Image (cartoon, rainbow, N blue to C red; front, side, top):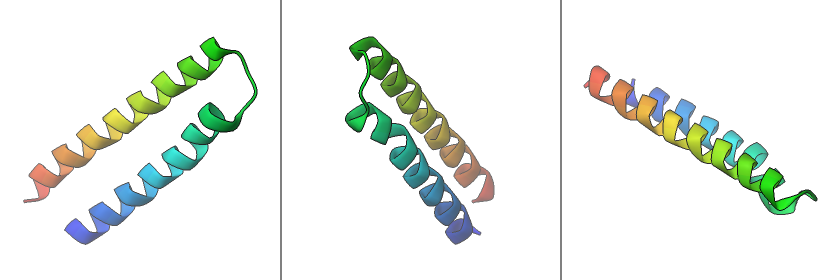
Length: 60
């Protein structure tokens, strides 16, 4: 079960990194717009990490 959990969250983190950090680094836009996108992406990373840790404790 741990392997499935790690695989699912690994894929989720890669997708967030690809679709979230791409616009922050490569997109044309105002600095405030890019900063807001970065904050949202970092919040999503943090939320996914907290859910992962909670589920990992619940499984073991």
